[in-house]
Amino acid sequence: MFEQLSLFASSDPLPYTVSQLVARIRDTLELEPDLQDIQVEGEVSNFARAASGHCYFTLKDAGAELSCVMWRGAARSLRALPADGDLVLAHGRVGVYEQRGSLQLYVDHVEPAGVGRLYQEFERLKAQLEAEGLFAPERKRELPPFPRCIGVVTSPAAAALQDILNVLGRRYPLAEVLLSPTPVQGKEAPPQIVAALEALNRQQVDVILLARGGGSLEELWPFNDEQVARAVANSRVPVVCGVGHETDFSLADFAADLRAPTPSAAAEVATPERMELRGQVDGLSARMHVAVAAELAQRRASLAEQLRALRHLSPETRLDQARQRLDELARRSTASLLQCLSVWRERLAGLARRLGSVSPLATLERGYAIVRCTDGTVVRSLTQLSPGDPLDVHVSDGEFGAAVVEIKDKDVG
Image 1: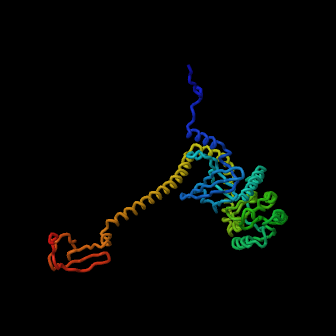
Image 2 (image 1 turned 90 degrees about the vertical axis):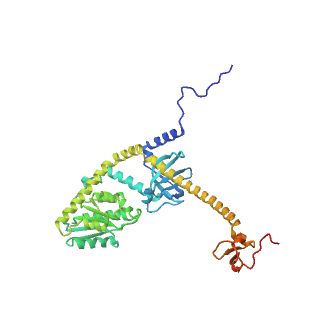
Image 3 (image 1 turned 120 degrees about the vertical axis):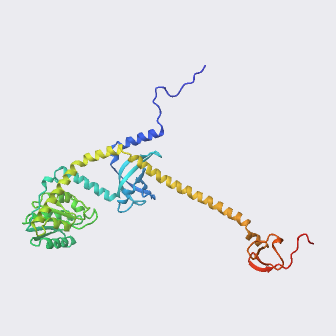
């Protein structure tokens, strides 16, 4: 009379398995370019470093939390690991840990949030000036092979000035040095750096060295000022920029005719080592640097796209999942091993108690003794003895000697 009806129409697609659905979510995220090259600002919490060297932590703000993983290689590249409560800027890609079906940020770099904002401003200005052609290779000029007058823009109190003078005196003492002093740190520095460059451009100098020693990103920030970069690019005289250390790059570096890793290096590349051949070698080195930088700039965009496609097709994601799974199994195996050790210790203690209860020593404690012949055999029968035989008697607290005086059979009254 009644017919049982299915709640699902026969034409509906087959349901996903959990693994299929999680894998589809993962593929969707990994094919979204904006989520594979992303920066996230937040507060660090629950930071932990596994025995494998991989780091696990949470980024949170007032409204949400995000699980993060940073593999051992990325952690090693950091000067210092973040700590709970730090406000950081994390760069990486969004993915899914399939074992738990959880969204994660796979982090490849972490830095304090304040530095991150300066870096974003640096990238914005760099892109703007590069689009204007300010950093174009064709604007770069070769340095004079034998400069007669070298202009220097730096602080007269800075160690960088003495470094430059030492190098110039050793390598090329024929050149005259003209200092245009300026502060190289603080808010007042950028306009004075610009004025110092303009002053040297009104003099008869062959090359200008713009220099200062190393420092933090904030301390080097005057050399990322837009007006300073424009003054360097518009200089009538070729400019060599030697700001900070080898790993420090500024907008002034890109705008200069040549970038040197340090102030001393700026003095070196601007002068020959008293030989024309050395000057020619330096010129070829500078041209090679410009050519490589131009080639890298042209290929950067296409390389990033190819890397995203390669990452999607490679087994890297599964390896990432396996790494995290391995860490989980390591934690579980350690806990299981400790539990097994506890059980075996308890069993061993019980066996020790049982063994003690049947030990001859326990028998001796109850007042019994062990009698041995002089050859060490235990006396178990009268047939082993004769009157006058010496004996060794062991009791609970030691032993003493004895002798057989009389043998009485148990049947004798």
